[in-house]
Length: 483
Image: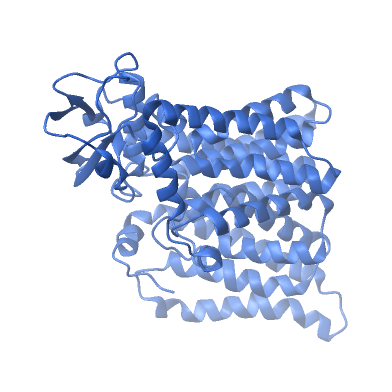
């Protein structure tokens, strides 16, 4: 191994270490277990499939109750519904009464809540729940906790950090790689979101992995077939994972002027497998579930605009890194900074259109799928600014990233004490770089130093915010947040 490769390897290890250190910090309690009970739901889904072969979980849909015929003999054990003390299984499913439901009050990680347990559960595909079940230490669903399953998305996000670095290094340069991976590793919204055991975090990892594999697929058959396999799995993870094969098909069409029927076929096979799974368990419920999901509230462009300017995790935090990422996308698209950004822009547009049409309610985790792309866009914009400098980037970075993070660092204390310091920073970072130009002296070096210092301090602010989440989180929960 050459000295250069050793250096790159150590850089990746360092950034991944930072990402892991702050993601693992208080991950059991922040976000709280009651933030979204979807975490436990996916776990129950996986556990029920491994135990009986029949998916059981809580659901908010009415289709199960509307179709259920008789619940008088229903009881529960380990969150699997039994009928007349008989447990469901693949062997007896053809004669076992279904669908069944029962309302159960349960205490999870200290939080008491009411759950409508349904069987068979068909709201979501089964694969992600099965994966989570392998990471749970509880002997039964009744004793399960988010403490174990949250390790999976954390490990997955560390892989994402490494993939961001490798992809950016190969497509752009070392500067873009280190900047992008550091932003994703330490951005507060990225860190907190990556702790929740929801499928979108896995989809985000697979998304950047497929983009990397696609860049290698021309000369590497293994990369190509691995993409096909991932596309097959996508419909079995969650329907939103179809963004991955859709993006790859469009990238190939717009960059190579051809359509990859292999990608389409592998995805369709996965979709047919999911449909067969649903039809076997309960054809009528499966069809009604699809109709019901298709009638969810349509928010369209307003929903995407809210996500862009009002990041959520899922409680709101004004994270300047995400806002700056969207600004970077606009700048990159207008200036056509690099041909290597074209696949990323196509992937971003695909994600946007997908959720404009099918996103439904404004749930924050829909945005998590493109979090790696957002970090890359910011990295490309900042790296390009250093290389071919434009002073117009100084002010947006200061206002959007530096100032928002600076505010949250001092959030909950007397902000007035720091106003003079803030004003001094404005003078140093915004005015000083322009002074040399008044004397017809090259000011680029001053501007680059200002942006570099702001970037480093912004990473420091990000770390301080993460360290202070224990105090910050209750304020967000009570909606006492600033905008």
